[in-house]
Image (cartoon, rainbow, N blue to C red; front, side, top):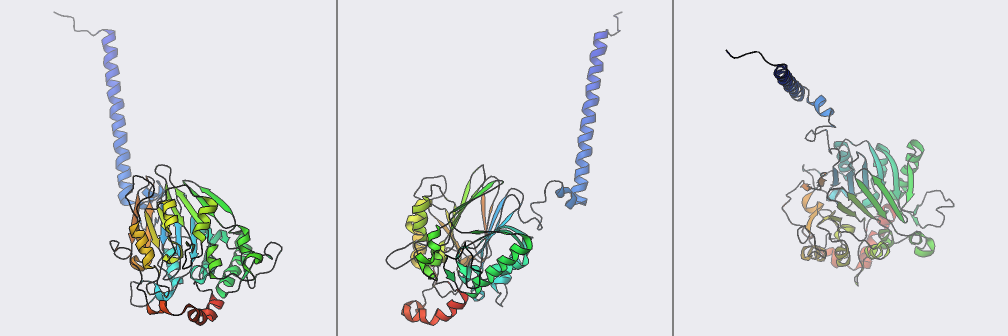
Length: 419
């Protein structure tokens, strides 16, 4: 009869197998217990569950997932107001103006532009802005900046160097021309109050500002000081000189697939028919060397906005126009819409050839979302498939410009209307 006793070596091997099985069973059991616990937590206490991971991306209270970028082009009628939710949780607002008679609404009654801006800020759960940029002093950009300052904390304020009519004269600003409008004065008063109450830092839009955050970089490229001096523009700048001072704010986002968004205020090109020449100044001074993804069209899509020179230099894939439904300037102009429609890429890349255009006049509020992989998603309140269209060219565009200017002068002097 064969010997059935196990050797010490065999017994040791069996013990090792049994021990390994026990460890595996223990690990599987532990994983199952953790899985069940997370499942219970997910379904029974979702807020607690997502709170452990920085918030639920689909939760309406989470307006921008961590690490993502969102840009909101608000439908404020004829004007500009842009809110940027940065990937590190900070926020930026560029301009806050508009014309209440020219915005889309979901109800039959018109909604004031300041209500649109405040509602958007509150819906986004924003209580503080790291950066506030006023591109220039016209009412359709500055009108409600004081409202924002009076309702939210603002840490850094970037403003034109032009003085307001009631701004105290100092050694720093005494050489700058004055903009004597009520709307700009209200803004400057609110800025002074924000400095006194919360310690906000104020920066003149002169030269170049580099702002770096986690996952993004903002390069704010402004005009030089000479363009604010009384020796250059006189005691008070005219409409073109104010618009010319608009900075180019270039936002670069992401490390995987960098996306570039360019904000322009009311800068535009220049040709025989006019234009303030801000785009040419930018191209000649800063000589941009990048392939843009998005361009916010300057001056609401005026005839010289988004010039061929600018398009060829920065090669955008998308252009956003902020213009009112029934604005008095015929914005966006047919020649500009045609120029965008006819554009073909000046720089070879992997993106689709040409430009896709959106406008608040056609699409209402426009939101651009970009995730950490660089995927861009566009959402609009109105039909997103509608192409960018020019405004109807009304009869007033044929009025003698001198007569037209004379009619508007008294209003512009007080409120700083955009020309």
